Image 1 (cartoon, rainbow, N blue to C red):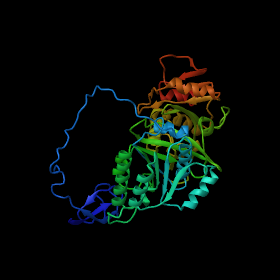
Image 2 (cartoon, rainbow, N blue to C red):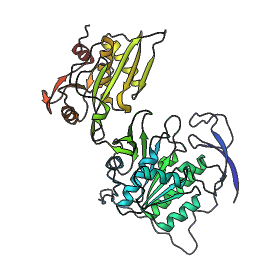
Image 3 (cartoon, rainbow, N blue to C red):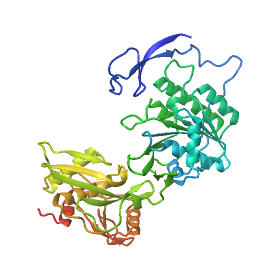
Length: 455
């Protein structure tokens, strides 16, 4: 079999015939690594002699198929993100920063699944068996019948899995597994792509649930070629800020469920504990708050979440004001500042602006625009928002406030935590909802006037 040398980008997986300092596909520098690629065999797709291939069968688009069966993990927050549980013959890729708790979460899930009667295999390539056993004792999961192995050779892993035929397979992590047929170091694009393909192929043929743990880059993206994310059925990120006990499980791809659900955990000494009511963790009580603080009534998937947004507008010490953001999009902050300056006449040009989402949660919902604007105005005029109030709504470049979806769900959660009023876009039904009085705003200038800012 003829061999050829190619250069593969370790950031995006693009293949180039010769080395260059920059990958033209993704723009990364010094990421091209020489690898040996095997050329295709002529006639590889030819039909075997003496055998007739089966014709491709088609079905009607209007046909109905039964929903896939689900295997509960025993952790309701994990099941919520997966869409109701694990689907047999599926592959899941979980990524996260080092030390965020990926191995702890999967070991707890493996123990719960094994106690329910399913066969679970846990393959670790980064730790010794004694280290995993010690963690299991700390998590009080050592009594669970989980089959544990420490191995990185793909051939040995597949042989062992075929022998025990598990229902769930956990590989921690895919970057440590290597195949002897690939002439590249473990963790490179070629090895990760080949090993992930063989493991996913095993899961599809055997009906097992495959869970792969992936490393992340300094930008927070899962390391390795993007083709791995296309191979699997679900891509889940495990997020968390260092120094904070909260952990967020978020799906960015899911072929068997929604991609906007989140699972909330709290890291304690005994492991990860589920948090069914995250609003109580991401904010304090419903009482008085200082200037620059606004409570945003958001929705993550099907779950309402109330979180406190904090802003600070301090005099700039240098010529160029600083803009620092934690937990929100910096480009969207620049847009809100521009709208406030243009439509309301508020000047932030001589002030450093700091914005933070309390609790370590990252918000991507556009309905947070109005809450950010309220926090900024409150910080600028040094005047707190009305007591027991929440804010939500999308802000347009014209200053118009656009409606946000699932208003009733947001207001019910606010009422449950003791809030009495809400600054929100105009609704079809005015007045109050769920015991919370609506203060409807049509324009961003109405918010400034409500906070006592004079034109």
